[in-house]
Image (cartoon, rainbow, N blue to C red; front, side, top):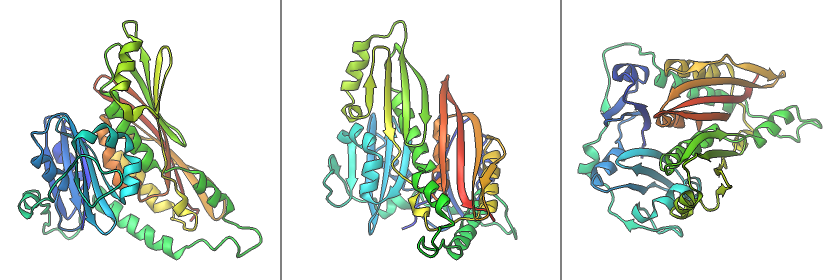
Length: 367
């Protein structure tokens, strides 16, 4: 079963520009009072998240869905006040681990459309019907144009081409020569964590930050090599018992939070690593150029990549900055998880938006 890529952008972004920058053979577009939602796919499919939203439109507060797709693949989504917070797909154990905080937070309204699982809680529900899905079918965008250049198609082609090259550049096993010429590369990716997972944890923490009680001010969300941390400081009118009661109402945070006299920190681990890339190399030039071009097209300020490497492998570091809704980071999810990229970030609130600064490190071949 094919699941589309979801791009979520603030409603203040121009719709026409959003559609033009993200072409695809099939798409489904909708909008709420706060956000654009654009589903993209290379093949006919359905916007499953919208179908579930339509079914449970009258459910108040926050809720989630875990749905079995096929074989060992599952679909997961979480909603807060009828706003789609996050969607993802993968095997059930990985999803339950990565979204442990949200699973615990919304366990009372967690809808299961899946086989029995040790962590299963909440209500078992019927699968989406053909009628429910058909309502949210992605439509063809085919036009009589011989060639379309756009961020989504170009990036998909590049990733596919890079994947082909990657297969043709398999790193020799480390015991082929007495001294492994790829040792530095293997060591780097074995210690690096995935930018995809780090950005995902930042989005989760932004949802938690929105519920912090009065008298306590969100300072920042920071992403380093191994963790993503939300920092909240007490203001003059803030009361420690109030934040303690708030924490007691969120038992899923008990293992991740630390409350001192004037500061609360909530730290989520970034568990997904880049170890799968130890025996593979992705060429740097084309994917890296396309990745930075995509950020520019999405309105980010991009600093040029700085390379550090040798004859065989290299690391390229570049930064992006933007004042934005954190939900816009969700649009990066489907791209970052396909690439050997790690990230460090600082996100500071300013009104209803966040000042986001991310430094990415791309690991790949020198040529």
